[in-house]
Image (cartoon, rainbow, N blue to C red):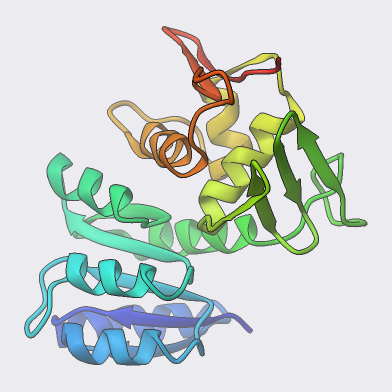
Length: 231
């Protein structure tokens, strides 16, 4: 049973979502302010945190920023519907996904399950199976330990960043259409105006650094998708 922390200052909404998610098979705890949410999230007792942006005592961005300084627990941000700035900032700070409020509980359930699936190990056929080591030039990814090393240095990635990188490495040297990368890495079809995939790739570029010759590791093929560069 996956353990979910639901952090939102709307007590009635929390109660409704908690009941719905528990009926879907999750164990759900709640927090109604940022400081309480951070304290609970830092215990490591949760498989995923659903985090609202607007909360008293500490907003969701500050909670996420402090959490990411210590842990890579998956986080799904709840943002004001249509507020691209909040969505982009949440992803830049390390959120695994975002969903606009008010949200449909069924959509929230689907997004939670998709984020949780990204933390599961993958075989060459992208199902469950034996652990693998993927190596391209000076980058190494191990699916069993879910670890990444770039130029022999460990790189801390969120579960979603790890999944995006894994898909790119499996197709290294080839261009992956954004629609395909979204379905394989994020577990959903690419939607119009959804910046999630672009932001995860941007975070990967920043964390992995360039290739030894200074070239970007992940190339954007305008109008098509992304390619992990092979030398």
